[in-house]
Amino acid sequence: MAKSKLFDALKNTHQILEGIKNNVFKKEHVELIANERWKICKNCDHLDTEGSHCLMPGSQPCCSDCGCSLAFKIRSLSAACPKEKWEALLTEEEETKFLK
Image (cartoon, rainbow, N blue to C red; front, side):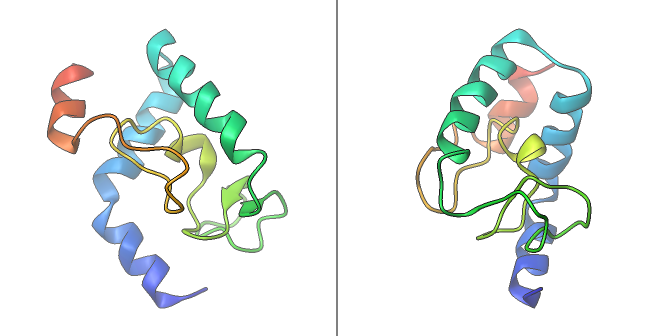
């Protein structure tokens, strides 16, 4: 696993935690966005269903480009696709306020 992916994950801790929270405590509006993002991801060449490129073992499916678990990444409203196939909808600060 590339060290740069680990450093990027550390920089994006807020987004990862937000995605985990949104995966555990599901909200209809977040799930609608996640479903649209998943439609894009499941047809992407960077989809890793085996887990060989996941930062966290056992977190597949993940993105082979960034190593993020897609269960969490697609539910973080402040996260964006590293290949620019979908954008962040909010800044991290806006997301925190919006989801309270």
